[in-house]
Amino acid sequence: MNEANKKVQNNMEDFLEEEDFGKLLDAYDKSKEEAIFEGKIVAIKNDEVYVDIGKKSEGLLALEEIQDDKGNLTFNVGDSIKVATMGSRGGRVVVSHKKALRKEKVVKFIKSYNEENENIFDVKVISKNKGGLVAVDSDDVEFFIPKSQYSFKDSSNPVGKNFKVKIIKVDKEEQSIIASRKRVLEDERKKRKEIINEILDKNELIEGLVKKITTYGMFVDVGGIDGLVHYSEISYKGPVNPSSLYKEGDKVPVKIISYDKDKKHLSLSIKAALPDPWSEIKDSLEVGDTIKVVVSNIEPYGAFVDLGNDIEGFLHISEISWNKNIKNPKDYISKGEEIDVEVIEINPDERRLRVSLRNLLSKPFDEFSKMHKVGDMTQGIITSITAFGAFVKIDNVEGLLHNEDASWDRNDKCKELFKIGDEIKVKIIKIDEDNQKISLSTKELKNSPVQEYAKTHKIGDVVKGVIRDIKDFGVFVELSENVDALIHKEDINPTMLESLKIGDEIEAAIAFIDEKKNRIRLSVKNLLRLKEREVLNEINNDDKMTLGDIIKEQLS
Image (tube, rainbow, N blue to C red; front, side, top):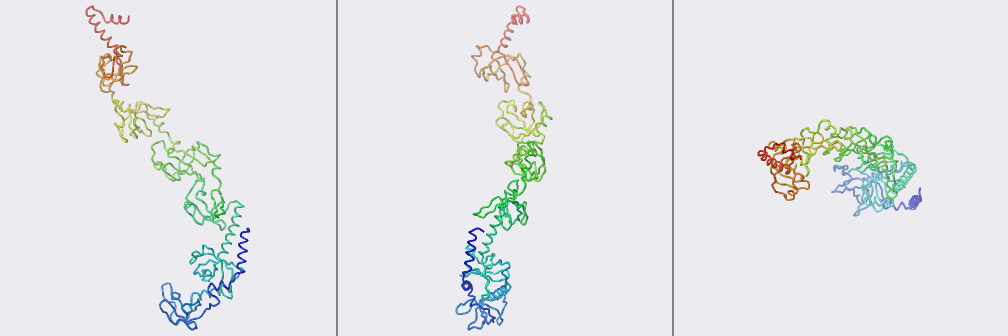
């Protein structure tokens, strides 16, 4: 016991030795004047009962003392009844039947009382007076608790409260029992301190008893002292709902992690009393390992998986499937489901474990590459539309349909041609294995404008068009709707090239047609040669010059 507790104990003993118990009892119920009489009920008027107690005037007894719970009388006029004097009111003696019965029980208690036996009792306060509190135990034995022997908190509104008291004085002569609430509190504090010091010194595993479960943790009794196990100190998995693992009355292993002497708060931990599973897997688990786990919880952003040894891993939504548009993990996995996953990150120091389910699944791109090749035509569904094109889902992969591959009309855009959810037919025009990208086309499903144009035109034909654009390398000419041709600057006389402007009409000869790539090349120089031939042909007709002569002349 420390000096402070010794001082309190000594002061209390000194107080009790010097206390005038006669005055305390006198303040309690004037015991010296109190007596028990065998009286007789002579009248019952309103809420008062008149009892003949052999004095000049009848004693007054409250009517409720001779009524049962239903209001029926348990005594009637003419019946004998035991009463105890309580004082006086209006010149008449006030008596109590219940007080008399309690006094008899006090007398019986005192006769059998042994100071060597346990002298702590559970009592309920039934009244309060200037001197202190009147309380009774389960047998209706009356105790008096002097004002100096109960705490301020108790005195704020003590009537009706239950607590433990310790007998500090039994007065056989006055037939009264003096008890103290303070003594019990001091003993509890002393015991608590001894227990705390003992378990703090040992710092070892303790078996506790779950007393109460709350949303934030559990209160656990360790040797008569309650400590809090916060919900974050229950499992190495992290914060858990204590009611899902334990119930009141369960025995649990705990360790003390802290004690606040000022607030007298004892903090306990269950997980600190158990082997650290992170230490166990530190050298046995590596990135790339495949492990079997159980889905323990599913959230919108992913799922938590249980390794079965009080460790949980995190499966992010992006690691559940190769499908980039996954909306809800519950569409792919279920709580309680056993699955195989790959370890992609393990950090025992930070107690972090990340796993992947998709890494153990076949890559959709690889499956696609096995089943399709460039040039194949297939069906797909528009999943999203952007400024540069549309993404089309084919099987479990997405391909890009670029704007320029959607239509032969250079002004058409995917956002104008399609909407999300449309099922369309496409042609695979590129499979990029390295970057795992697929390029699609819808315009190649039908003839290009050049292909249609080539049905009525051929190389050597003289055509006219409008200049659409002029570049350093040549001139673009629009021959008809969506049919453009290029004249390289080498195929135009430099003096003529300098005078050309957008919107001008120009005449040239078709020099090249590429139907697959939708390209046409024109040549002004070829046109000039053709015109020269026409002139030569006319001369030939006059001079009988042959075509061979013309060619020889051009080659010379």
